Amino acid sequence: MSDQFLPLVRYIKKYIELSDQETAYLCSLLHYRFIKKKQIIVQPGFVCKYRTYIVKGSMRAYLIDQEGNDHTLALGIEDWWISDYYSYIHQVPADLFVEALEDSYVIQMDYNAELILMETYPKFERFFRILSQRALAYMQRRILSNLSKSAGERYEEFSQKYPLLIQRIPQYAIASYLGFSSEFLSKIKKQRVKKVN
Image (cartoon, rainbow, N blue to C red; front, top):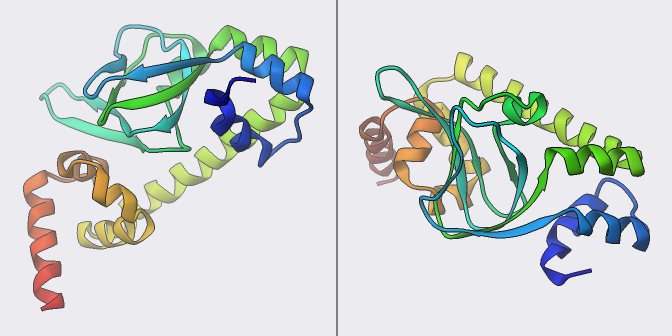
């Protein structure tokens, strides 16, 4: 097994046991890629062919509405997954852009390879089910937070839960993810500083 696939293998082994044979077969289906900052790997109108695991770097998935505003649906750093999942799972044209926010290294598995993997070793169905369940539970929490909390409370919660993202993800992307403008985020941050002082 190539060392470049080790982070993903370790990640998967948190959820399912893998024999050497299963690990070797998994790795034979993977692609290791360098994605340059600002490079887009998924875009609207084209079918999303890959599920992407971030080894190093940061990325975001976002939508641009008819007025030209962008809405960030997902952020990702090391050990996180990112994609346009609706496009990937149904193999229909994407609605989202997926873009690198930093120079990034990723591991990708294409849709057909994933189907072959699950057919060959059904335990991988369990792994992908766990991934889906976790993503769904997280999405529900995020929707509830957006519905029930003020902008300031959402930022506070986000900064406590993801201090690394606050340091590394550009302010415009964090603001878009939390559902407000960069200017509004600047106001919230200034208010926090005043409270501390």
